Length: 219
Image (cartoon, rainbow, N blue to C red; front, top):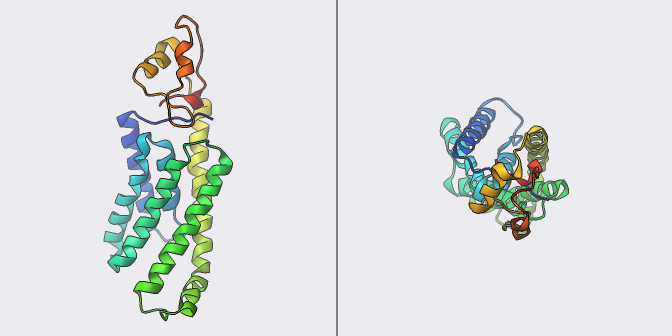
């Protein structure tokens, strides 16, 4: 299944800005602990933006909101920030052989990985739990309520972001093959579901009036 690769600088800028403002505002407003859209923003950006740069939107969200809320132990911050960047990397991987089922699996993977990494960091870098096997288990058990909240947030906000984008694709009018798509091929902008140029499309005669399905274009 093909996907949109967002490459227009202005569209990228506006989406970066929207995601960053939304993520910062959500972290600053009252909300259940760990119930945030940060993981979803990283996953969505990594999947949909050109060259996988969209997931970097999580860095300004985390840095600005942490500056306002208060920084904490840098070792724990590295674990948190790194876990969210891993979410973005998972989004980049979802470009290959995309399906909604795969997106859901990657969301669950990201949430679980965040839970495992950050609570391991809490156990090893903080004095809150004994540095024993029993202390590690206790760290994970005590964090289960937060894991449920983060998992719910990741699933909900991923559904909102991916769903909204899919709706845009459904209602997005697309020009004829001659007007736009041939130029995209010449500039090597079109990518199929495995990330390469679909060479078969070069064989289509330029005189044919073909209409491109919006899920296979470049926005």
